[in-house]
Image (tube, rainbow over all chains, first blue to last red; front, side, top):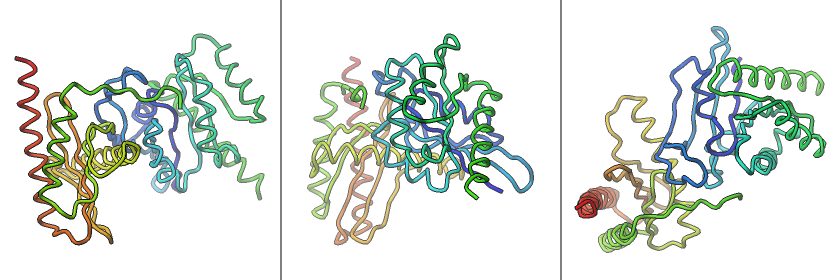
Length: 177
Length: 143
């Protein structure tokens, strides 16, 4: 069985890092020099996609697709989203517009949101209360999506997000039957 | 949304790129659109398109160039020189432009009436000439 999972979120949220942290194969990246330092101070940015794989057994693997985060690359989003099981939405809590960014990506990936196939990972949190902001925001919108504090440099953190997403997708599939 | 991307290009860069696009236009009567962008998708210069159209085109050119570069590397086929999309109504040609410290991308669309070889030669020559001019321009800035 092959499952496809997306990593979505704004520029600088850690999508490439997350895929690199968990991929069992050398990740494929499409990086270019980042000239938009107002959005993020990182040196490079993804311009087409990131790709990695997690091998579960001989016949099963999880394909990981990272989306470019900037709106100017939004034409890539539906191309890469085709056939995806769900998405991990990464946010950077230190960004002043993190909640607005959450809304933006919820809207852009409304089809996945509506079937509960989305998990939120928030990076650079200072304490557990920080996560409450996002949980409360989702609750106010009538959404029950898992939200985790995460450090995408650590494999276990990223695996937790992926495992939650797969578990939710399986549960949703059972409920739909 | 949020902050509009704000990338200020060095003075003179736009003019230099624009001049080379106009030269390219002169050599190819079937050229429909041509743009020069940064490798991360910001338009620098354009002919036969609006700034809004250029923004979409340059983002796609950057993605195409990035993907082509990665594919070239993955399949161990040396350095990427360019990408050609053969379409029903013409050709889309994308070419990497080497520049000190950063890379640019030149994208050109030609009508179906254009000769494949001529279009390919023209964009190759334009990228080469632009690269040479950019190197000279950067050196003049340093001096």
